Image (cartoon, rainbow, N blue to C red; front, side):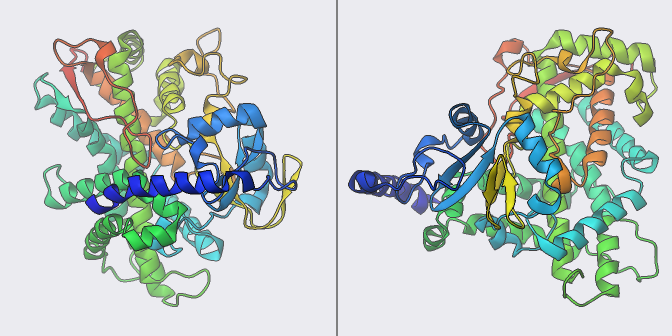
Length: 492
């Protein structure tokens, strides 16, 4: 990693030189595409996008060029959709027209077009349908899955008790949602000290940080240069270590046995249909799907629960209102159940506001599967499209105080929970999060149980204002590493 970091300043000088030499000959935007900023040769509009806050830069450009505009990243031209109306209309109203993903170089190198999240075509359809069926069959998002989440909640509570009110690393809160995903994948949970559990968490952490690094972003923009410099190799090495663990955990159950885990279901499908032709799964497809679910299922729920705890320690008054409602509705000793969410409007509003405020995945690109009309512009097949979810969750026409943490966004005048159409943290349409129902149930139970049992606060000597809420550099907007205190409450 040292060599690329030394070469990056030299690359910057080269780009500046090209800019200076060719600025006068910069091409005008294609009149058949939506309007957008004038691209420069070689780098496109990269000079107008902040690396660490690319979504905020795109949001600023939308205020100048409108809800549908064009940017060029390196040599790749793409269309950005900003604001609730543009994004919702495109994702929900376009049907299959935005169902594909563009080929992102780093994920092509990792998965080779396989898996659930960065694949397209018949293979993606087969993998997604099998995933949906398996989640339903195993009871995730319903009572059987909820019981597994509550089991993990008790383990998390025991872990926090072991700190006896002393500061604990925020990352500890991610262990429980990660183990829920592991239980889904492998059919069993792991002790928090288990070497496989520790290894997987460490590797996932490293991969997520590397995927958000400038080196990998440079690789995605200029794959030929990134390959020459080996910018993708650290990610590939760690992913291969994860794959090795997944292969070791592949089940050997006979095809006639009912599946007990996600890997069971995929392995049986591959055994029954061993061909790797269209719409069928090979063993490589099984490992690719498991890798996708492992990475996405752990990162999103774990980071969201950590953000929720961090924001509760920062907004102590909000935390107190949540605990008052939990005490009143649940009483002492009874853990939350999925059906309690309707009786806990303030708790539900707070959890929804956490997801709105953090914008964990600001944008995930789509790709047109055919010539598609968006915002009055006919985009050719294969056009990369960025539905800017952060622009929806921060849309000033939809939220009273979009830049503030305000649970009132999800409450009406009578204090009842208010469903908001602009709440799209899981995206929408054909590519909406395949595990949304599981994630929502999991987050509600873990968040409610955590605040029912503990008072969260900054470490001794620090005030709420000292807590750092600047997202750490990574593939997602994960919270920065720091410590909190969890003091047991008498109601537990």
